[in-house]
Length: 391
Ligand SMILES: [Zn+2]
Image (cartoon, rainbow, N blue to C red):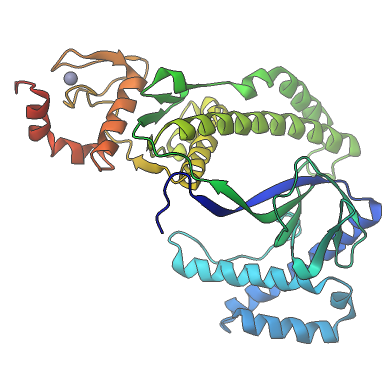
């Protein structure tokens, strides 16, 4: 289906809210999780022993187990059924999606609490969330729900905060068509350098700003650490304080990425971004700076916003983007990382290193390619177009 500007479309999105469960509700959710985990692990075991657990088989297993075991009946059937549904989907994806492994057992230590309920298992009444077999939970309604939610996922993060993530549909208008394009080069110096300097996203160094507080918190942690013995309450408190600071910096980076991506997507029809692989930087000596730059989060947000707005998003392979001239597309010698200015040996074009790369990326995408080599094979015609003499 093609959509044009001004069309109204219905999109499915997640709306997440903070929950403030009481002691009893918290206990009920904490008791639900091991039951669901047991079912998940049972399904993993069945698959390992070669009995090919389909959702149909697993549902029968659940019905049988619930009639036999009172402890399983004490929990919500919806949450348990959904656990198996998620397992079946994960198993199916492991056959179809490249690089996706089979679902593995969830242990008490390595898995975070997460429970899903469908409409049979929850209602929103008087501003509170009512889940099956659980006391009502007050919700912090930070914004209004756009429609009646279909499912809700309850989870707890590493700080011990509870959240409800609702799956809802909302109606939006398709943005007007634009023939403007933008090239984006991700990097450590500038998180996202673009062809138009007004859209550059500088490295905001959120973690470095939080560094002093963080190092104090981590020192306290180190002082209270008791080695192989069980950790004290004071150690756990210090660990939580450090985790809070980390989380704050990560949230700020996410917020920055969203504001930037929204601006880029609103003003451009073609978005050509470097297909940056963060794993490469994570192994380098710049790992900390690179993590702080939040490149992955920025790239992910941009792609998501672009696709949702029906913009043309092209990911260009990073190879040769910094070595190629943005003016005549001649390939130059590799630039050492400290050299920030690019100068072309063929046409003498001089530009900022990242800005030049962004121009190359845009040029590649504008001609319908995804890597610089395709552009080079296309060069003779391009040279005559630009009237650049062959040297
Ligand atoms: Zn040149």
